Image (cartoon, rainbow, N blue to C red):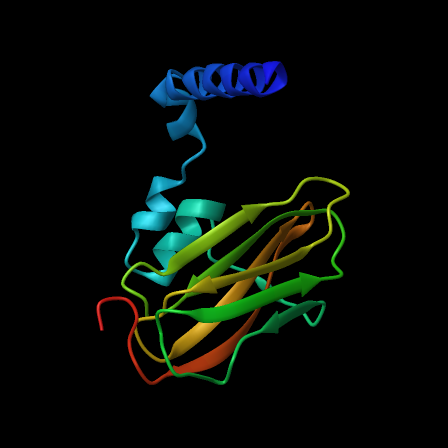
Length: 150
């Protein structure tokens, strides 16, 4: 009983510390220009400072050829590139093309799986940022039922 009470108090104190953290600390990490852009190029520039990438066969992008429901499109990205800093997902014809970005810590496996929303048939692009530059690969996904407002 005593350990449960202590764990509850510690959890509440940790939650209070996070809740009272200045908003400026949270906002500094948020790439608002990238996620609010309505063009793929602008989203890339907002996140990376450029929209130029090098095509790479060292990035494995697994997406379905046909997504029966655009609201839940499974995406898996793996890469054998070295010194990976981040992996991002961009969907060209979405209302807001920048779907997700994942910061990768050194020594971490570069294997991302998630589900995304797609408004309509479009290329899904995986962008891998390394210490040597930006690399990408893309595959088209045909959407039969829209997810982003469709």
